[in-house]
Image 1 (cartoon, rainbow, N blue to C red):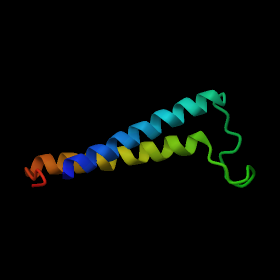
Image 2: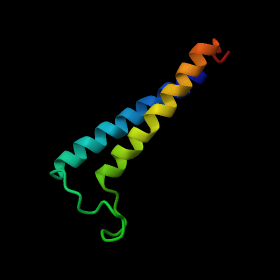
Image 3: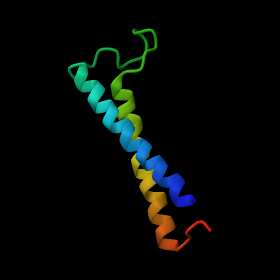
Length: 74
């Protein structure tokens, strides 16, 4: 079950990264609204991209640690 949660986090991270890139492309790779101050605190697609990229290394690290220690979560 521990692997399932880690893989779910990894899948979510890659989904956020992909969605951020797709939505940012739809906006023409504009940086307008990146700072939350001027656009009524609306999220910019770059925020999704950054969140996804930030989640990938820790999720992978946890998967590698569980694999190395042989702890399968049972």
